[in-house]
Length: 72
Image (cartoon, rainbow, N blue to C red; front, side, top):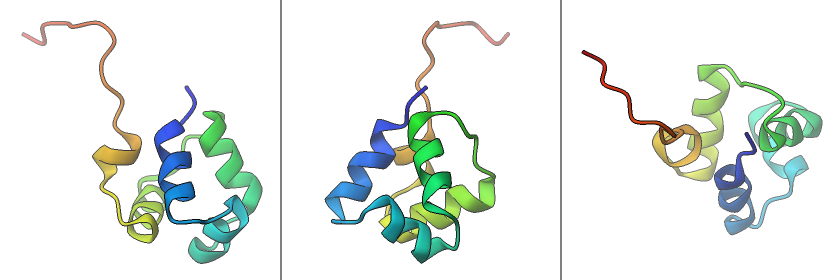
């Protein structure tokens, strides 16, 4: 699933994929793959992205459940 929230947060900060990548120490391709939903970043990488963009994990990476299931 594409990560539109990450892209929007990055654009709000007026950052390119390359800018964000450089700020957190990864490649531009890594950011592109995360935004395209083709790469699942580690928790550490998620936290670095959140810190740089001044967002919470929930704001950028939490997916709303598509089907409500009872966990009982």
